[in-house]
Structures are given as C-alpha cells and as structure tokens.
Image (cartoon, rainbow, N blue to C red; front, side, top):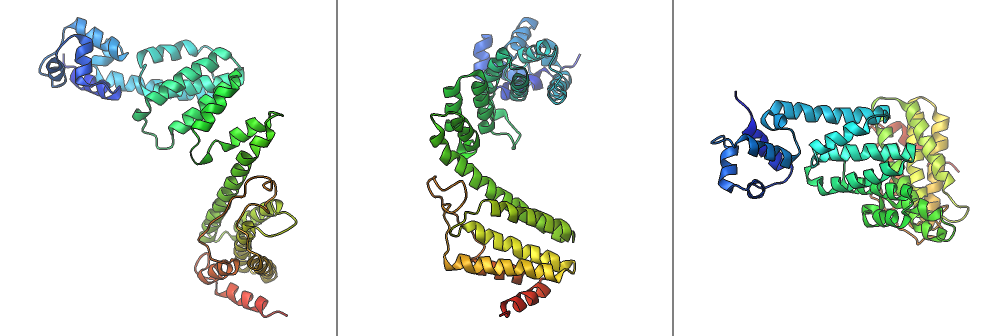
Amino acid sequence: MKTNFSENIKALRREQHVTQEQLAEAMGVSAGAVYKWEQSISTPDIEVIMEIASFFGVSVDALVGYRMYSSDRDRILQELKRIKLEKSYECCWEKVEKWLRRYPNDFEIVYHSGVLYHLASIETEDRTHIIRSIELLSHACILIDQNTDPKLSETEIHRDIAIAYLNLGAWDKGMEQLKQNNPCGVNDDLIGHELAADPHRRQEAIPYLTSTLLRCTGSLYRVVIGFTNLFFEKEDYPSAIGILTWMTRYLDGLKTAEGTSYLDKDKALLLVLCGASYERIGEAENAKKCLRKARQIAIEFDQCPNYSSQNIRYCGKAEPKVSYDNIGSTAMDTVLSVLQEGADGNDEPVLKLWEEICNET
C-alpha cells in the first residue's frame, strides 16, 4: 500500500524546526538514513516509525498518511475556534489536552489552545486555567517562527500573558511583561490603567495615559478622514457631515480654555470638509457657518501656533509631546490646500463661498 511517509516526515521536521541530523541523532541512525527516508529510497522498520511518531507527537497513522494528518490538524484548529466562539468550555479540556499531546510543537494549535484557556480564565476565574494559558502562550512565543498570520505578533501574545499574570495576582510579572514588550507604546493603555488603580502609583500613570489619549485621538482623526473620503466617493454627504461633526465635538472636548493646540489645525480641516459636504446637498448657509469657523480657528492658531500637548485637556501635567504633520505649514495653508484640491476634485463652488466669507466685513 502506498503511503506518504517521506513527505510527512519532511513536513513535520520543517514545521518543528528539526534538522535531519537532529532527527538522526534522536533515532540512533545516520543522517544519510533520514535523507533516504525523505527521498523514498528506503523505509524504516515499524519500531522506528513508532519512535518517529512519538518524537513528533503524532500518531503512526498521521505520520504515514499525509491526508489524514492534514485534515485532522485542520479539524482540530476549527474545533478550537468553534469552542472559543461559542464559549462551550464545559467538558472541552480533556480534548484540548489530547490535541496538545498530539501536536505539542504546532504553533497554531498551541497558540489557539492558550487563547482558549486565557479567555475561559477571564470568565471563570479558574486559576488552573490562568496558569495553563501562561504555559501555552509562552510556548507559542518560542514557536513564533511558524506563524503565518500577519495580523498576529509576538507582542500581542505577550500582552495576553501579561493580562494572565495580572489576573493571577502576579502584578509585578504582568507589568514587567507589558513594559518589556511595548513597541510604539501599544501597551501604554493597560500600563496606565494598572498604575492608576494603585493609590500609591497614580502619578506614574500620567505619561502612559497621556500617550494613549494622544495616539488614539490621532488614530480617530485619520479614521474619520478615511471614512469622509469614502463617503464623498459614494456621494453620501449626510454621512460625511455626521462623522465630521462627531469628530469636531470630540476635539472640542479636549480643548482647554486657554491657548491653542495642534488640534485646532485639525479641527479647521474637519470644518472645511463639513462645509464642502453641506454645499453638495444645497445647504449653503450651513456650509458658510462651517467655513467661517474654520477661518476663525485657522487665523487664531496661526497667530500663536502651538504644536505641543500642553493646551490639550488631561495632558497638562505630562511631559509635553510635539505633533508633526504634512498638511500645511500653517492652519490657513491647510484650509486653502483642502479647498483648492478638494475632497473629490470638484470644490470650485466651495471656493466661491470661501471668497465671499473672506470678503465679509
């Protein structure tokens, strides 16, 4: 009977990052013997096949039958994801551990099993589940080279490990994980949250919370501009007005009573786009109101430009951060650029409204 032993042993060896020499040493044979197995030149005795299967953590059937191995692994992954989505944790752990014994060094199975234990521990507060999730997620970090999902990074896995430590009551270990695996400040929100929860360390939370607030504000701003472009393309101007109005109100909530900030420059641009949207649906007066506000904000900002975070609410006590952009050297440049180029290349009517406003006494 024809089998796929040679293809399987090669695939398993590569998946688990084992060289021919390492497998040969583990089986007590020469590297040449392993080479012949993989080239279908020879086949080992059944006793050796059983040892190889045990070494890779798979059944003998799975080792000699590629289709069985592949479909079985895929089935296990689908089952793990189903359990996670349905939260059907009861009576699943014996199966999960069986799958882990079968595929102890398969990144996807180890990772998704770790996530399953992690999520279950959050809802059940079962300490054994927390500890097991830490073990599996830590092992997944070792196997990270097998990962093929571009949306999943080692940083995300370390964040889950940190949360598990925090839920376990190991606060120092959790915080150490967060701080040591914090590229671009992605964990600042959680670090700030944990520090602020401690009455003795609340001042330490300020730079982390401030960093997160400013970063999230910048992300929201870019998302709103992106949606606005999509709405203009679909000529869905009411939706553009809705999201632009929401964002300007959000920025208003961050404005202090004194001084200017770079958020004023952003708000001026939002108001221009809002004015253009109103013009598209024939509401010229509302369009003029938006453009007047944009002009007033731009003039006030350019008279006293401020690209630091000092005049942004909730950020006053933190170390000032500086903003950079490529939307114009001044706020007025930004406004004129948007008016001239247009969100959809057809802003001549809005330019005429702008000229009227500029000529008002």
